[in-house]
Amino acid sequence: TTNSSVAVELGARSYPVHIGAGLLAEIPDCVSAGMKGQRLFILTDPNARPYAEMVRAAVEKTGAENVFILVVPPGEGSKSLRWYEAF
Image (cartoon, rainbow, N blue to C red; front, top):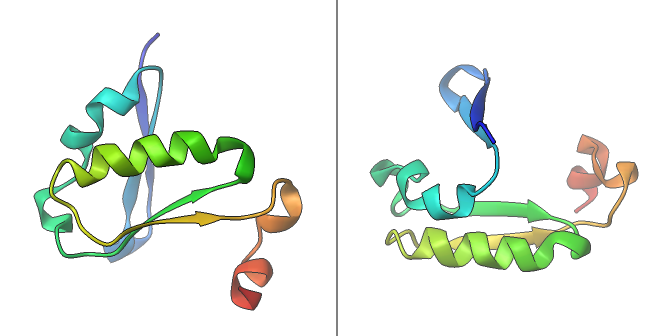
C-alpha cells in the first residue's frame, strides 16, 4: 500500500493529513518537535476509540504532553461546526 499526504490549506493553521497503512509506526516522525508543549486533540468516535488510544500512546512517546482524545457521536451529525460550538 502506498502512503500519501493531503495538505489542508488554512494559512498559518495549515496541516497535513497522512493516509495509508502502517502509519501508527510513523507517528513519531510525523509529530513535529515544535508541537511539544502544545495541546493536541485526537478526534474520534466510540467505534475507533481503541485506535485513538494507540495514537495517543505513540504521540506521548515523542515527549508531547497535553494529548487529549475527544470522542464524538458516530455519524454525519457530529461532523459540523454547529455540533462543536455546542460542545
